[in-house]
Length: 123
Image (tube, rainbow, N blue to C red; front, side, top):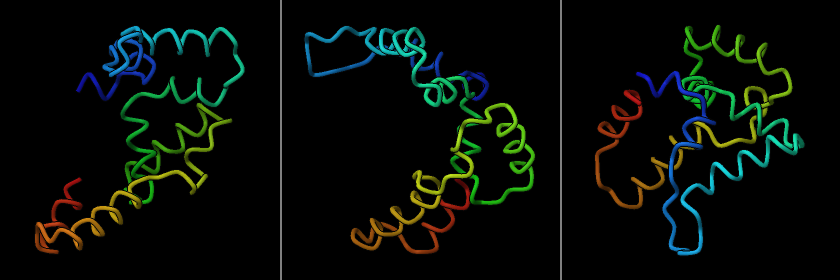
């Protein structure tokens, strides 16, 4: 539950990166984020960093048209006027996940259509 209320910036800054590059610092995320905020050029990215994980998840599933999400989307839109995550349909979202899952299941035949549908409904 705490994760849902945590801002993306806090999640990323506090998560050490694992990399095959032995020369990379485990605090690379923190360094990059601090640089973005220092330069103040990437306003859109900075707005995304300020979103809570729950808000990002609501944006991700916006096309499901859940009643409770509609009010949340309005609030997010008011809070971040320059952010086009809600209105821009070019971003991968729940629709992409559903389509990709169905395509992969058709290729692999790992579960029945009914089971896949039930999993996607629960998600």
